[in-house]
Image (cartoon, rainbow over all chains, first blue to last red):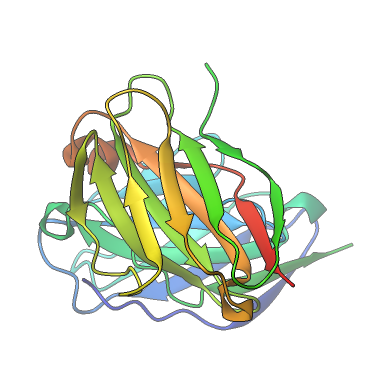
Length: 111
Length: 118
């Protein structure tokens, strides 16, 4: 499994973009980078994932560096409801698809 | 299309009793993963099941815990003779008909079962 490193916590002003970094220098070529979040002990919520190319969906954008050793999750206009713990996970077929969660980044969106 | 359904949402058991947690995957999904989240800790993988098969139980405690996913019906996580340390939130996730479906499209988690052992 790819080891990921994320800051423990971050703050963001409401309405501003939240940029959450993740280092995954040991990620292998067939492992995807996933982002999930957990809002106050609810079930984890899938946000986005990618392999090599940058990805965008209705929730967020994922920017993956060319060497794939790091990535950034971007929430373009953070709201108070985006306050959550965000997990960056590297996973692929070799692990049978199971996700290994780290400690994540606790994002606080402030008014 | 209903999501992953877990029940009960909250379960209280006395020490020594049995706890049964149920997970119904999304329609069309035949792969289930169970995770445990102890208070103030992260999510830990427990077990991965397909219909009638345990594929990976590397995260399951060696004693008192078992899981099944029968041909018909929900997946069941069973904890025998519960102890206070089993108090946690238990989440399940499902993926489509092969692991590659989950790898390619992500997994859907249920809302969890909060087990409290008194």
